[in-house]
Figure 1: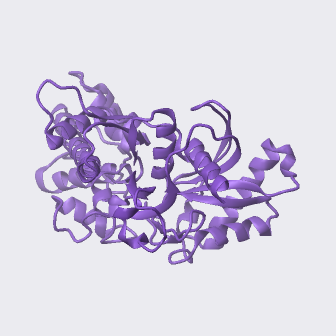
Figure 2 (figure 1 turned 180 degrees about the horizontal axis):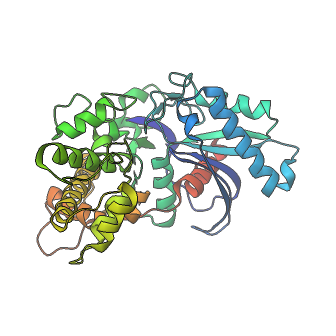
Length: 407
């Protein structure tokens, strides 16, 4: 659990223009956010830049040069040709676990989401990025380093004050919430009032790295052993979008090799790692027709496999099991925060492609929360999951505004 130094929620009176960068596992998103004088109101300009796959296992210079060049291109396109007499404030959404000595600095603890860039772990990412800006004469300076979950929490609360938890369920899985400074032993000497609210980035994707609590299967172990960081992010590898397709792939290969699934078919494509993404699973679950034509077409198109009718039913059932397990395990993380903070009623702002696009995920997670938190029969859901506001854009800009105000 990492302290973010984001102290309290925005008042709603924040104004100004702020640049943001969101570096996730697939794309780099660059925005300029204009906060207006009405709560929840803003204007946003944004571009996305696809991260080349070789960057994910390259060097720090290659990574930061790409980020700086993307920002340079954005400014030239949207900000008076990139010419400005002063450095512009930037909030950098960096969706990886860091130890933050200040709100603008963060030492990378470890890469997640299968990134393995050399020369960054154990280092402060802010001076590395700012050095790349300086080298390319990009007029930007970092005022806040933000985890995407923290940005989601801040942006969602800005639009809906009932939000008490921000969560990401996409390539990875994580959550953030507000904690009292007096309950955080690691900052006991920071001189803060015990009731000061500070956002905590839980990094609960690393829960049970010791493999003592979660119901781990042989397929989970195989995914862990084949990842760039074996023994890390155990919980995340069981639930997050990056891994759900891989779990399905390994189960189907096991059934082919041991029980004759897809007998007589060429499954060479299926044996390729990460050939199945979460969209494939969603397609299978959405087809509840008797013919299962969409499922058949997906297997034929993506894997070159033409399953028999009974095999289609088996695969649909497998996907239901994998999707249900992911949703129920995901709900455990949200429920744990609620129990720790004695939250009996709140909204949870959730962002990410799996939450927003995966068929039935939201309903399954809601049902799991109802069971875990043991709500009385017949009552409405007391903790509700809802699509989050723009955490990496608006949330990051709001945090930048808070940081500038307090500097």
